[in-house]
Image (cartoon, rainbow, N blue to C red; front, side, top):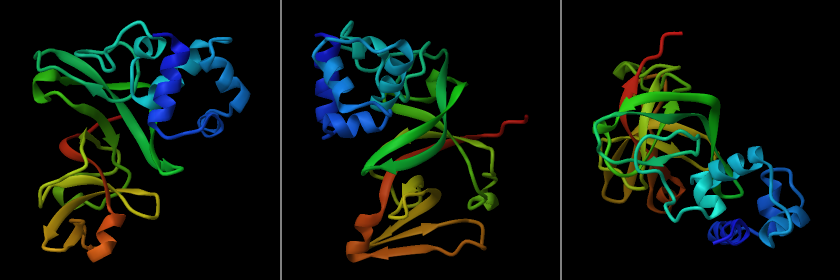
Length: 219
């Protein structure tokens, strides 16, 4: 498959027009059209940004392979990864921010910064490190600047620590408790009151992933 065909398919999977997709990268609709028709090939830095956007490898984007995600350690920064349990050190990207852009989740990666982890601590799935921004879970020794290992998933068990996004388009790291027709988002720091959602309000809670491990970085 050619780069242009693959780019078009990936864009359509996101439900974006050429103009909407181009707007994420300050590129004109006509430029995206040239890419998709094979009349122009983007520079490497643009390819890298596209790969980050779609959470894929550059080789997959270029049509060189049908493997969307690497299977073990990664040399490229391509977003989150699908990992095999091969018990060797690998690197995962560090996310500094998460936000919604036209109803799509977008990740702000720390450029040229990755953190090591032993692959026997993860199984197949998409993982990343998330930098903690506040002290909502300070009573559980999760502090600003710490790194949380996050597995992307949209469902949590009651009591799990999750990465949550609400209608304010800001993400939070909180414990999630479920009871009948309600969801409670609970911080361990008493200065942050619980957020209680019930009924239709529960649809406002967007679960991005589950926190699996915390790591403190001493700079």
